[in-house]
Image (tube, rainbow, N blue to C red; front, side, top):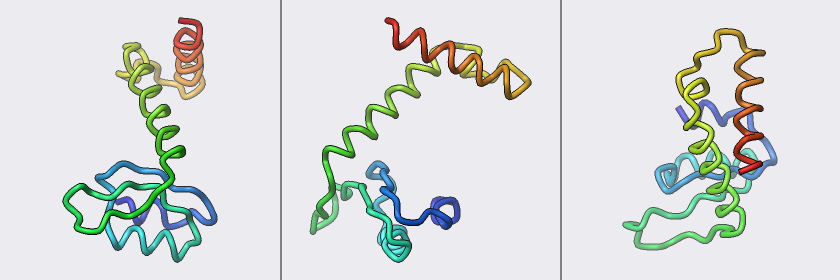
Length: 99
């Protein structure tokens, strides 16, 4: 699904973890003039270079989503309306920021 979901992305940094280290995906993103920030799989013979600073920022975002999922109303999508769900996400993010 990743090639399809990223097909409209142009001129952007695309960050991902090692699971997205596929030659076809990298080539597609490079044709779309994207900068790929995906570390190579450890089993690759030739390790590709990537921007480690941006990769660390991606990891921070991922950790934030893990923290926000600790709130049951967000994790289980208890709220049915999008506006209420967004309010709950904002509230959880505020609590995380304060603590």
